[in-house]
Structures are given as C-alpha cells and as structure tokens.
Image 1: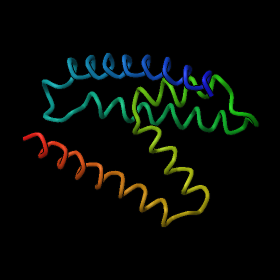
Image 2: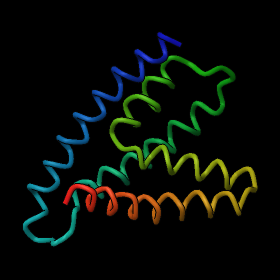
Image 3: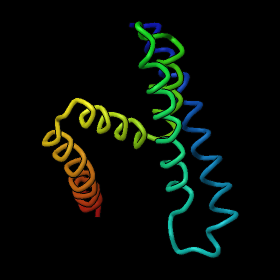
Image 4: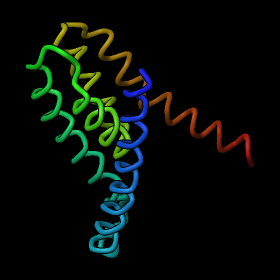
Length: 124
C-alpha cells in the first residue's frame, strides 16, 4: 500500500504539472478568439481519451500493475479527475447498471457545481 501511494503521489504531481502546461499553451493559442475555458476543456477530453486507452489496455491484464497505478491513478488522476470520473461511469454502463450510471453521472456534475457554488458562498 505504501508503494502504491508513493506511485500515485509522484504520478499525480507530474499530471498536475502537465495539466497546467497544456491548458496554458492551449489558452495562449486559442483563448483570444474564444470566450470559453478551452484549456481545461481540452485537458479533460484528452485525459478521458488517454484514460480509455489505459483502461482498455490494463483491463486485459490480470493483476493491478505498478505501471497502471502510476499512469492511470497517478498521472491521469492528477492531469484530470474528470478522466477518472469518466472511466468509472463507463464501468457502470458496461456492467449494465444504468440507474447507478445516471445517478453517478448527473449527480457528480450537478451536485459538484452546487457544492462549488455553496463553497464560494461560504467565503463571500
């Protein structure tokens, strides 16, 4: 458990830096022509694509590998937690849990925004 925690710690730090750099570059290139948070939007979509690739690749393996922990939970988890949310929603769909998928997906988005709003109101 300690080794896995260290892998996630190191990977998420790298993922966070990658998120900041990529979002910054995209914003510099495109933000001037768009009134839209394109940098993080791009990061979230790219993270989801990469998480899907990693999920499918590692799903074929029997044991949870150190590389899977480092890359998926660490790097991509730090790059965007939206990718983790997306793969968990996909798993619910693949298991045939439509109601759980809807509750999880809609609840995460709607309640997440509400909680963010409430958090901001607590400070103001």
